[in-house]
Image (tube, rainbow, N blue to C red; front, side, top):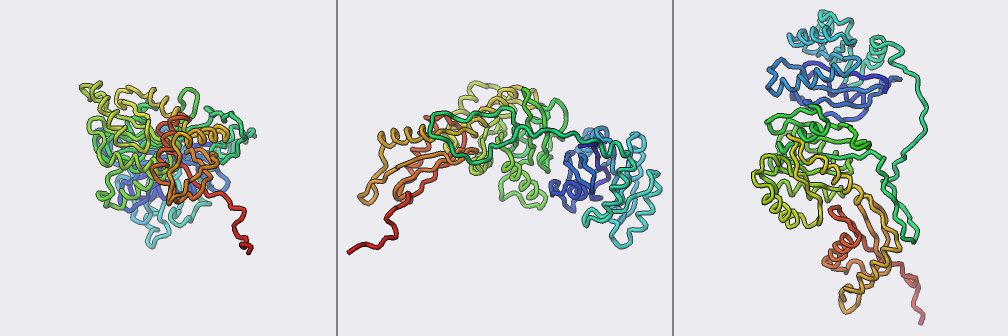
Length: 474
């Protein structure tokens, strides 16, 4: 991207709506409630022929530094410092307020180029608010409607004029297409013992999920080494799913901070429903999901439901027992947690669990190692030859049961995809195969091919009958 633009303004003037308009997706949560956005969210914007990075920010409010609103303002000021240009959004429909004038003065002192944007200019009676915007002394306001997409050409021209032609249209450098990600594709392997290698150079997408106030944002801030995400003692601070990128041992890690997920019966407000839906989208987009438990009160019912949800979605999962610095007897608690993990999460036998402290940084490097190791297992591919030798050995040791006096036969097995590992078994009467035998095969497959803690899918398919459809000869 050529340059960076921050969208700022008081609460409920339409900043997130404009952000969604520019990125072309509904990434940021939008609601009539003021103060929905709390963290700063980056995105790739496209405006006619302009390409740039856009940052959505929290509404500017006057508040003490120790309050939640004060911490939100600090995040917005950090975005202003990071950006090359600022879009100062005011509400033309409701007119200027003292807050608009206060923050207009703040932007003037920053020394950064500012484009004044009069949003909601399509509304009846918005002319008064539009002309009032001239009194801010930030130049001519650009009338737009972020909701309906009006005035985007004028906004494009104002941005180019403010930042300059050279910055707006840098020379493009042709780059060869490298690191093509083929991890999601199906494959048709050869019947040999070679396994496809794991590419450690590809970026890794990781989602951080858990109950409210489990320490998810604090954990990501400790990884980054800066207060990138809003944190505090209040539960439910995070609303949007915010993505951040950083490097770990030369590999790009893209982490998604998500809103805390409470029990479904307690989620009543529309805004919280939107936040939880955003968190679920992040889980589906991620490759590995870190489920953060509060080590002081682990394995609540909601913790287990979140873990089950992640595994049913087919994601690779790692458990992180946070707030380990508050545990008085670590060895005894660790043994208890291991026993509960095996007993309460049988669907992910061998799942990796790491004690950590987002506050002090304890165990974070070990957590990243476990994330990468789990991702390797999630991407694992096994040759058809090895699978069929295993199938023959497994069915010899413990043959499938006879149903209605007829023995079931498992003939052939192959891996149809990875991420998560999925296998197809050709057999007779697949509908009659007992669930207990499917579990037996899954557990043996997990143990014999060293695939702990990831979902394993086994599909059974009836073989083609060459005589089906032929009329019986008399």
